[in-house]
Image (cartoon, rainbow over all chains, first blue to last red; front, side):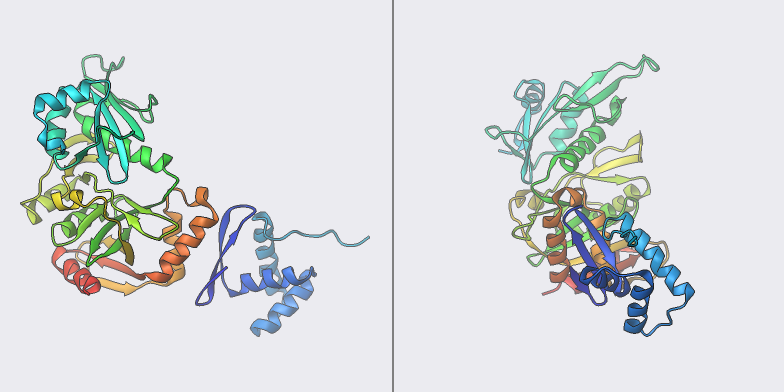
Amino acid sequence: MVDWDGEFTVFQPAAGKTHFLNEMGLHILILLDRAPTTLEHLCQLLAERFSLLSDESFMQQIQQTLHRFEALGLVASANPPQ
Amino acid sequence: MKVGQLSLEELRARLGSENGLRVKFGPFMVRIQSFLPSLVDLLHRLYAFYTLADDDIAEFHVQIVPKRSLRRPFTPFVQFLVDGQTPFPAAPAHQALTMLEWGINLAIAVRVNHLLLFHCAAVERNGHVLLLPAWPGSGKTTLCAALIHHGYRLFSDEFGLMDVQSGQFFPLPRLMPLKNQAIEVIRHFLPEVTLGPEIHGTLKGTVAHVRPPEDSIGREDEPATPRWIVFPKWMANQPLQLEEMPRSEAFLLLASNAFNYEVLGEAAFDAVTGLIQRCECRKLVYSDFDSVLTALNALTDD
């Protein structure tokens, strides 16, 4: 991973792909790499980190980002426990 | 020995022989075969400074052969072949030189994977390489033609050949195809330039090839390290702008217009990262040669 003054390039060896991320995108990956979590908890952590309001619109944006990351193979959704 | 030291008859004989005309283009050896009479004069003049590579193994075996067209039976057509394959359709015989040049470039772009291949012009000044990455139509060949006749050494108007281990760039000074209005622009700005004939009706319109200066071809074995990356764009009547470019943007643009970035994977990622970190990155908008030469000279002065 390379930091270009707040924008990041990340090489994903498994897919051989290069990804361009902003600070929010990178932080999502860092948090999920530490431990799996729920969308709600992830949004709460991100809102604290970036001093944002974790409202419905913010959660929708993060969910869309997670869907894109999932399509790229960067994250995987886990089934909720039975 | 250089191609220009052959007589026309010797050149014709080589082109028609089994061994072909073997020419060194930068780090590559190419065997060219053709019985087409019109190519002999053209290659004798435009390839004059290239070194004959009689005893070397050729990486690319290319041919220009006659082809019959059922639709136009009375028009002579020619076909380009590389190792017996036909990468694009036949074209009228007067386009043989453009087919040969594009065909060799295509073969390099598709087959070379021991070097990272950027789609960019590259020139050298004061011992360092200036890369000019740009998309087709942005005027990089025209700008490159102006630069190499004002103190810059031609590496290539089409390829930046990077060794991913050393970070050095290799020259590949091939003919430079000017298109459409650029032909008259260069004729006017550089009356001393050696130009091939105007070839009409190609896929890219009218094309005329600039022969690289003898010094650039003579030094085709001298690699150099890059120091500047400038993304040029020609825009009519615009004042010159040469501005710093965010490195993340430079990375994105450079990586996305490399021919074999994905093939080389992590090695390419590391190479582009190192390249961007070591170079000054600029965006350039220009509309006239005098101001762009002044600006690029200032950038590349020691």
